[in-house]
Length: 467
Ligand SMILES: [Zn+2]
Image (cartoon, rainbow, N blue to C red):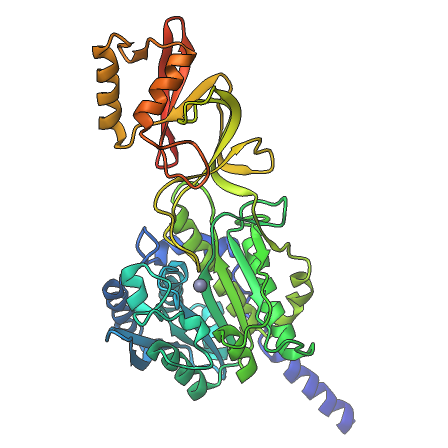
């Protein structure tokens, strides 16, 4: 009887091991964000405000969040490494190594705030007992104050992993080498005019299991990366359905994410894109908050690799279809004195995140003609409307133009008393060299034909339709 009794005792002990507390659902985390968020409505911290919030969090966290590393940017701004949790598995998360990519910095502060606020709840307590998070928010404060991708030396820190000529890159490398984290999260923003697949919606997020070599063999590190990337995509699904894409990039030795993987820290890339609508910046911070926490819970539970197969099914980032505004089927007086014609007109607006290219100087026409292949985040049916370049100088300039026409007997109560030919001539005169043609920064006047001529119907100013 001794052996069966022993077996029974072993089984009883196994059964007595407490089950893991359930991880919070994406919906529950999404709902909880409003109660813990510290990040600003703009979604973009200044370095000073960030330090104040991080100091405050660490001070009230009862040791749950602590500063474990200090560095200095090229221009002497403080760099901080914070730790949360005491678990054996170390996880490195760094944000805003591109100064004009702020979303994840805000999400990381809110995430730390959530961990502090819920540290005695079973799910968070379990996470903090399994993981030690090493958090480096805003690795490029010098770029952040200039809204510039690069650091004060003009170097793209994310291409400095081999040469290590930037103090910010050396700080990141030193934290990695000191702690040898078992997973890394490289947090960025990408362009907003990107879709999840050729025909999918605007990509709010894109994820990548960052390659650690050109031909990295499939193994635990790859499954961990793909699993974490997929866990983030799955977490976003109930909140932003279909809006997560797979980032498309091959191995780049001098990039940090790729080097982390090569150095032994399997790393995922999270790129925040666009999510057109009300309070876009806040909604994107909140989405980051949810997907990062869900991925960390999966890691803490040892379940992250289970999601890896879903990674292969994600649609790829696709560019070239989205623009900000399309006016459809307009009658165009283009500003060059040519007879009017029917066309669609597309605009792209400048954005805070410029990527590797140059920032646009203003809302820019990107297409004229049959633009059936494009989709505007805003679409305007301009059938029956006449569009012309507005005179440079905004509303004041337009009022002067109308006053000038009125003085010549060609306008009355904002109706232009002109026929087609006269409108073509007058448009060319007031446009003063501007034309509705690609790569021109220009505002538009919209007219409706009335009995005596043309009545103003609205404007496109800074790429936005105003009536
Ligand atoms: Zn970036």
